[in-house]
Image (cartoon, rainbow, N blue to C red; front, side, top):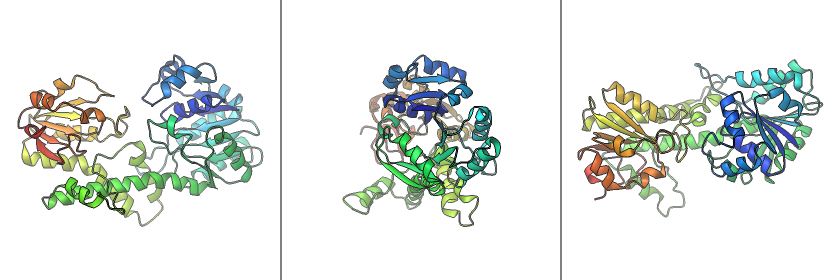
Length: 408
């Protein structure tokens, strides 16, 4: 099977490598020439567990990276889009990347090909793409051209491991498209769930929003506990320990390109959007809330802040929509000086970042921070430095404490 995958990002590249590992011939298409050259050289452009070995094994053989979209389409039976689907300033979905890609490859499309949409899209997007294809190509979807929405549901950074394990949802508008899409994914995954295209679109968004809302509840509970002068970690322990209906999440900075925007795909056509929109407001307000609490304990003007963690997700190097940058802007607006550290993004010596810090703001729960030597922190930061540890990384079961309390 010959497959062209558009977008060599954190969804497309691991998927291409998994297909190659399971005997398929794959062409990875991207407009970023530097990224394509790096991939051709066997260099992964981002962190992905297990991907380095697969790239070195298959690159320039069963897997080839290219900027030539036309050639890739002409040689392929299956075309997979992993392109971005952002929202505009009015939170309406933007299909520009997908539309542009379709128009650019239109002269190279042929009868019998299958197009798989793998991007997170708003409900109704697959049907919209069907009309777009039929208008611009003259093909009839389900008869001489085939279309499916097959969302990815993996945890970023663990695609290689999870792609063969997690059931693959296939959403289509006709039986032949469904059968062809199933044949594609059965090359590495036997767990197939069929549905119509709009149900599949909703399932993907619900997956993300269910987690996002749960995190928002945890963050709101943290604020409520604080208003009552109580420790959220103690309460979470009371709720969850040995209780079969527990499961309360810990608070934290919840962000990322999917969780940030996907809810807007649901609320622009319904009048009862409060739960999703309030969850967004809650999660996005956490940095400002935490910093306002710090200000009550220590003036921020001319203070040095050590901001630890720039990625939006644990143990990864992806900074898209990370709330650490919102925190940085707020600290700077209050007159503070900000030094930043992340073991995967900006790995300056942490001792220098912590040196003479008045505030230590742990923005991401990387294992690196959990394993920090308490004495190293106490030696470098000021003794009265305020630590904001919403992830409870240093195990004190407090959101706020002084550096002198670490390790005691």
